[in-house]
Length: 279
Image (cartoon, rainbow, N blue to C red; front, top):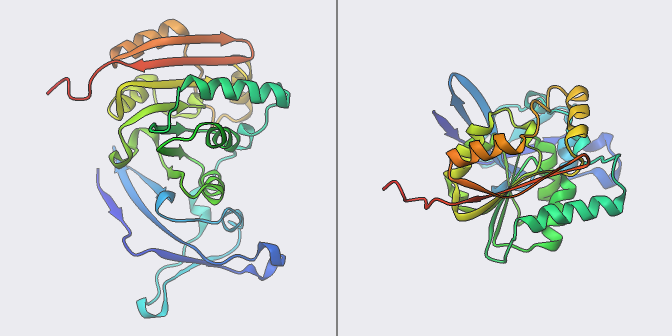
């Protein structure tokens, strides 16, 4: 795997004159890197080291130029169409749950992590609503949100500057934020990897006793509907109990809780192996 990190931040500018005054924004800096894996190159953006305007990203169809301050010269033009953003809007819409039910189920998922003020928390493919609840109810030492959607991450970063955001694949999360003692796989069926690959990657980033929470606030039946409507995003199903137990055991996770109801899915795994056990 090779990587290229842009040490000099790029300044994004856009033609803001087409927007009303309240949408006119100052340009912002960001840094990025690319990595290659098995012959395929991926573009990843670390939003933790910068601030990217959610409104700026939403103007993706407009021309976006990249320049640097006058004393640094000019750089290439960037077009955000290259990021090929998928439709993740269904994560925020829960037609089967009332607002009260949504709050209750989300709180149950959050509480399953047993987050403390010193916890280091990872969230994979979380909705913006889930991150809101996490920030509001469970203060922690570090919160890292990993997602495929640059737009969603920009919205989170705009609201919570202290939240770390990383755009890319879960199995390639940089070591610098590890180890974690809580990890949420809020929407496992959107991960383009086998369950074995996911747990293998997480085992390398978890502290002994870490809690891994796999959830879906609407359950297995809704997953099937979402898979039919969004086949490019929802690529797998939720694991059944026996399958999850077997794969978890292969990577030193032990099942602590499992709920598979028509309208709610929750599995809690506990990491049992010390990180230096093989040394």
